[in-house]
Length: 321
Image 1 (cartoon, rainbow, N blue to C red):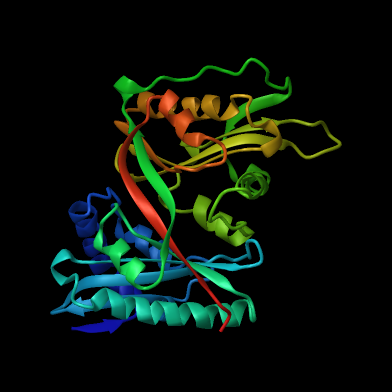
Image 2: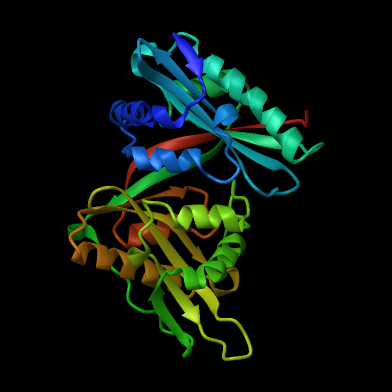
């Protein structure tokens, strides 16, 4: 048994482990090797120091990875730590060793990037009662937010039509690099009042929308043309990805804070989901913060989405190193 950073040559074993965990923990989070290669190359990620792989007899049996948001939120840095341990290796101290290494790395990385700044560490605890959450509690983390995964199939989908009032100059179009910066700025504004979010840098946005899993043809933007004197303005957008063939994942839904309450999100999301089902997709799913300030859960329920699993994000506040 030994630990070492996750290198490019390890991604196949890493994919085998993550996909086995998707089955054993019923998370439905399946990844191809190409997806994990992209994770190693994400902006700001240093695989040599930000990842840990646990190996036994040539097989990866556990892993951990750390991410630091490129910008501060509420005067703090935000670290997220993810990972997993094969069920047969749990409750033997392996997860604790990985967390020890990554929490130490969190302090070091914050000191390098944002010296003297406090930070939070978020850890995904999976479903209530899962060993990951129990370990987080034992390490001083507290339940901070509850999320639920929701899904809808073609037979249960209840699409919403166009809102009664749409600016005459607004049009619905597919996402493209031409409007990337407009949508990025709206994303940062729309999620500024959402728990756990940090503003996305240009590099982070390009990594997200340039990923192998991103589906621009099922990502739509309601764009308002403001004439030759001003840039167009994005009112609402829906971004999608695909990790499992013919299952579309809604990764972002955002509306300008001044345009909330007009029904834009329901309409744009309906257009995306309808297009997916017409193209032969068998399921559309998403994850939502139960306490979302926009009341997103109710919106998704009206469109026919049903909760399929729940999970908890645990958080610890750490002082600058």
